Length: 298
Image (cartoon, rainbow, N blue to C red):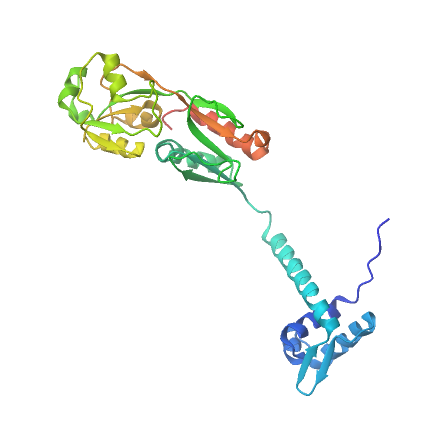
């Protein structure tokens, strides 16, 4: 059974909170737009309701009694919470926010060009892109989901492949490359992988598969794959790059893939916490990513 609250009039509570905050009946009256006499009247009503004095009235000065000191912070915090709730309601529904983490190259070359499509399809959800070479801690709340390159076997995470990954030599058309043997006179652009395995797509692995002797000790090295892409576009050398990240440049002719072989790499996967997979906003993000992956050059 719901218990009926026995509260004094709200006007008396507001008068007390203002007078206690200012320690002045006149200042409280100015704030509330009434006379000091009206403030005194409201305070007497409140004191009669409680059965205790709340102020010690002195000449040109008022102080709180122990009862007033006990009541003031509770009432102040309650009115603050009430005001904040009203402000939120007046502001309308809060926008949802999702944070998606990926490598700087994937953010710059794949996600950013598609961000307008996300906003058009989901205007009520703000998508924030977090760029980092290091995997984020999804359990710690650093991001809601992430795009990770790998085999998809991350313990305690839900993972689904978004894109397969193929790697091949790409270069500016200004270099006019025709045959793999011409790489021996070109500057090689290297991306330094955080983790290296035997099947990591490096120039060493590519040269072994192409049966070409290359001096892989020289060239230019980059810790950010997007920088290697920009260097290749600028004609500074030939890069061994993931084709999904340069699909738009290949389609526009800013880069060309002059020859093979093409190396099979790991895939790009969408990962999130298992308990969040079915949340509506996460489902919307996963569905949008899958849809975007069907149009590699958008």
